[in-house]
Length: 253
Ligand code: 5RP
Image (cartoon, rainbow, N blue to C red; front, side, top):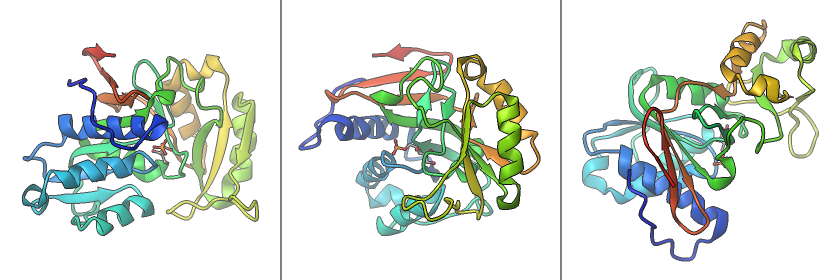
């Protein structure tokens, strides 16, 4: 994978890092023959779309873009790209998405933007799932960098029962996610609530086990633990270089 520093114009620091990661991921994984592209959520993903648009109208008129939520749907439409959905395209060539935290095995915590359900559907539907993030997300064990906990999408009427069960399972803090004005809970694009549940290192070292346990709780719709799904992750650094990690492959700093 290419690790060449990019021209970052006026962008600096974390923004420059996000853009460098996004550009490298697109350059390495979005090829002219790819016609169905999954577009994730968050503040890094606009740079993914920016780079895809730079590939030119000739290649993009033959493509369909599937969003993980309202934000990416808007991005696709505003950039004049063709909007698709999973009904029409249950198999996606490549999905590129952000992450809140990534461990050394490329397991990730996702759902900081409450999009975890659709994000996981698009990750699973994709032949290749790629993560793009800035250097702060590049960790060893999940939860070391992201302190907010694991986002868990729950049916609205079940949240309080699930919250109690999460605490019984060993969560040190399981809180219903509230909107910015704290006037009410965050409601996902699917009409559900989100519980952010913190677990200590003992649990986070085995994210697949934790995922399976939480998923069995009735009322849980999806868990923001993405285990064994990501083929490669690109972390942008402040100086514009990339740290690229690949499952079963090379690591470039
Ligand atoms: C939304 C997500 C985002 O991909 C995640 O929060 C990362 O966002 P950013 O690129 O802004 O750091 O999972 O549900």
